[in-house]
Length: 142
Image 1 (cartoon, one colour):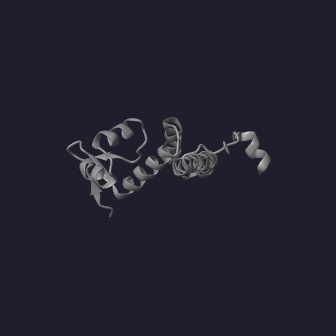
Image 2: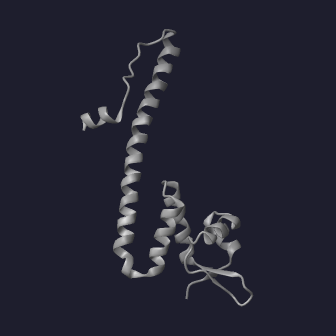
Image 3: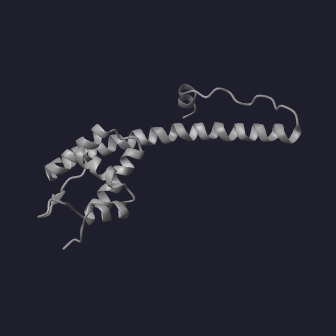
């Protein structure tokens, strides 16, 4: 049998505040929470994994509405496997696009750091070597 956890222990182990966990639950984002005879929430080890998943989905830009949709699908059972897979695949595509955009931004930031480093080292402003990077110019390079 899985170990049961109360909200304080779950919060400590998940690295989330009790307030955050209660908010997630109020938003319908934590399935399978039951209450004991005293009315206290009882969680399982699976809730730790679930909290990690929703935290990572949120950090990668998934909206609360999309997370509610995903959670609702999970609650409906295995008949929604394809829908869950499609939802996560669409989110993955958005994350990959964001990573690509951030990679371009990071390259430009690195060039600017080097530009200022050269200027500081030589005491002379280097020539501008930063053509404007647009999505269109990136598509042409691909």
